[in-house]
Amino acid sequence: MGSGGGGIAKCAAEAAVSGSYFTHILRLSFLAPDVVKAILNDRHPITLTAKRLANEVRIPNAWDAQRRLLIGE
Image 1 (tube, rainbow, N blue to C red):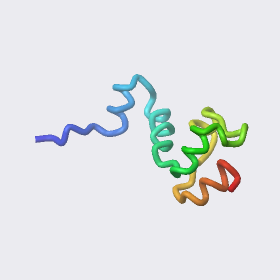
Image 2: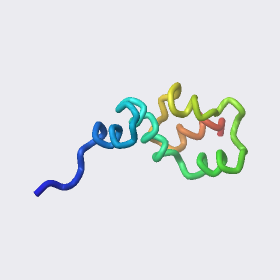
Image 3: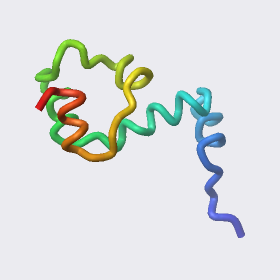
Image 4: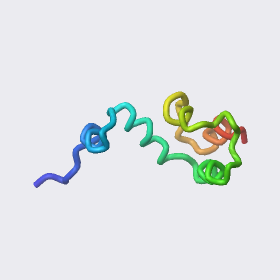
């Protein structure tokens, strides 16, 4: 019996997006909580856009590195 999974390709197909785009968006679920809070409270740099987050930035895994890169702390 299978686990019901299917991986990135299946999830991307179900969301009607490319696997690459799905992977870019999936990375956002690993943002540091305080970075998310800054975004939600509109206290982030103007240069930190959705496009930049989704497409242009290689987001580090370490939360302190994320802060330095994304919000300048």
